[in-house]
Length: 386
Ligand code: GLA
Image (cartoon, rainbow, N blue to C red; front, side, top):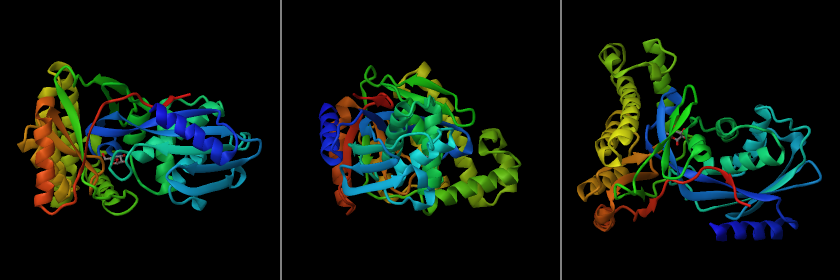
């Protein structure tokens, strides 16, 4: 972390020819449970991870914004006077989309000075760990401070979501940005996506001798196209037919009636959301009353629901989950939007090496590319580094 901090400062100074005013950072996230429930105004339980994106930012004396990153040579330049979302594309749509979205949430972009921004990160891209929310969190938090906007973290989460929805064109919910901005060490963020009220729920993994293993399948996903938007549309259709504002308003007890009103596919989409909301509530209660070792069954059930009802898993994710379960994990599920990305497994520390060996073997046997395997810890959300 210290290295990354020093490196981004040095690179900034070299690229822009002056020192940054500060370095801010925001983490990637893993969702413990509650998938696709956010845009249905239900519940999620993600946590921020110990992989972070850093933004070194310095004020300019004109109205220009320049943004660069250590993973591309491209330096994108735009004037605050003609920042429109139509003009944005590629990776810079995330940081520049945030600038635009701050304007949507009350920042007077006509009155602020330009800035230079350099981004560096150790959040893997395309792994389903919200590298995009990490960029949004770091940039929005930095600009909030530099431009003295006084926006709170929950509002900055909405800024990031707005950037993603409008500038990037991905119809995603509020979970990733909330996890990145609100995360705390060794704890998950229990978020009600309707009221946006959140509670910190300690995970207690260390005391229970458990670790969270991430299995990045390497299968790429893209929520700006295809399946994600289609699932969201099915959920909205289900809510419309059932006469509710959002699927949050349907309970497990309502499912028999829903089955009579909906076609089979829409019913299964609805059943995933409704049972997943319940599983989030059950997981929070279980963590508080019994500890993490008792949550395995809920994680497993969540995966089955995503695989069979919501149909967002892929063979590599199913293999990851089944192999982890069969070799000592106490629970496992795919995490994030689906169609690729990562699975998580809750693994007793003394079973970890067996799980790792089994995963390598199983992927090779099936002719799949080797997965990237690493453990993550629940970490602090967005912060100023220096
Ligand atoms: C992606 C989106 C989130 C959420 C998850 C699925 O990560 O960005 O808003 O919908 O998928 O739970």
